[in-house]
Length: 393
Image (tube, rainbow, N blue to C red; front, side, top):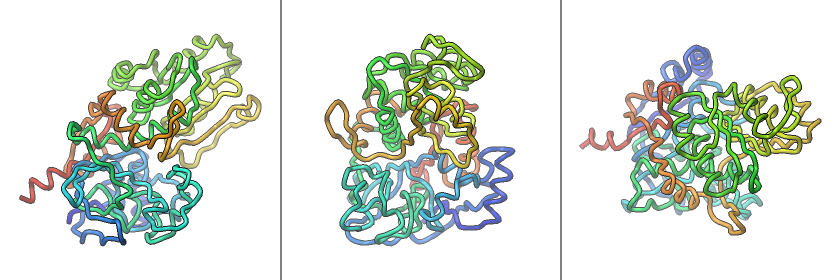
């Protein structure tokens, strides 16, 4: 089968890191990612099946890995060589279209009894990511035993598969996994009715989180910092009340909250800030515009950052993470995050965020496009494995 495989080659990771500092996404050309012909992964045990990806997205965590910027925190919960790709719509063994829920929790790993997080329905907090019947891997797409969506075949456990409705396009289906992350983030932000909410970043996560806020929370005013014209247009379409340049966010929050300013800090600020970037600059900005005892929810994946945290202490603000999904409580009712995500993709028309499709053989171009998506007027870039089927007929 064809697969884009990433091996543990330290010198290649260093090269990817260096070149991507000059041109983000260039790590695909100089790093350890390679298009190979390999055998399909073996079934790890009962309940597993071989599936065939149709579309697979390129997300921020994929880009940081390919460019050699991923945190060393992940080393114990990743196994090499692995095939990336965790935003996947595929055909299962019975020919049904399915979306993969990629977290490799206790059930998929055949761990009994399941850990407290899995028992509570929060797969993102699974305590067994390096144990059980599988090699280490926080998700499908980072585990050598499962393969990933950047290939023509992979394996998945039946507990990971969600049937795709007949009226969903493949483009809509591939947006379900990132939308599930956004739904969890929007609910993790604990927005109260009427709250002033600021969203930092208008890529895939930012736009889907905006859509999730409007469907599953009751914000008062939402102000969104968006850098590029197409991002600003989509932010308006998806319901942002104010869309501004990133360097204008503090001024808008100050105006909307009726705050004063001293130095770079506001006396008040937004009730909730959702950071969908995860950079040193974005976290600092988020802490600067949140009100005392407000909450900053970190959705974008940070690595090593240096931050001034005095305001976090002085203003008693909260800084919380939002990772993955599982079960959510919405208006007093418990529901699976992926079920909420299917609803949101359909109601908000989020398939429109899929901007470009590439063959596996065009990986370098695809990844460079994804790394520059905002600047180039794109949002979600995907690998189209349907093209590989057509080529192999």
